[in-house]
Image (cartoon, rainbow, N blue to C red):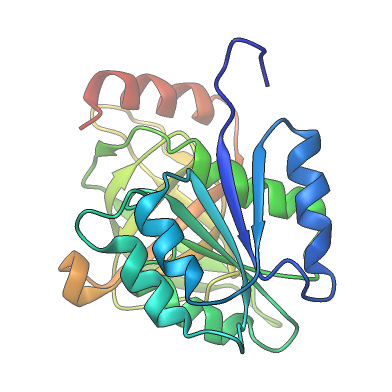
Amino acid sequence: MSEHTAPRHVLLVGAATGGFERFAPMLQRAGFDVHLVRPSEIVLDLVMGTTFDLLVVAYPLPEMDIHQLLYALRADGSASHDAGVLLVARPGFLEAAQTLLSLGANRAVGLHWTESRMWQAVGDLLNVAPRARLRSMVFADVNGNEQPVRSLFQTVNVSRTGLLLQGDDLLQPGTTFDFAFRLPSEPRPVQGRAEVVRRTDPFREGMQGIGARFVELEDDGKFRLKQYVKYFHA
């Protein structure tokens, strides 16, 4: 982080959880201003009165109700209303943590995931890429044991790092798929590989679908997307 850049403030909740304590030094080495706090009712007042850029929360939290925390964080007037929330789930709890993505959390990862995948999630939440509206059909091929299973979606928006897709096939978060879609007035499709990071909340977002991040973009796809978003971002 540049010396001329203000530090980003990160709140770690439940850092004493086995394996989770590695997050503090990892973030501090990268120049983040890290605050560690034990799970308690005090956390609710803290997020409402103090501005944080990111919350990294161990899951589950036996000491407090995670629903209360998310409600306080997203309440009108909360100082940390716009903070990203990364849930770090212990083995066996990732699926349960992912159900909270419609209630105010932004991303759920497994405590056993590699450091590079953790950094990807942190980076996605701290550096939200501009998005551009796009209506294009997307073919998504999930590699099965015998042959790929193809799903059909429609793009809602795209960014340099991912895309939001509308469709009935609710792929599980963590699922990777090969994709292809076309940008307006371009004959060649943008192709690559993506990973599902969340399912949409139909009540809050008014649509059923998935959010995915790009794992790989073929040929000049990255440049073409960058140019599209630059000129058509919302």
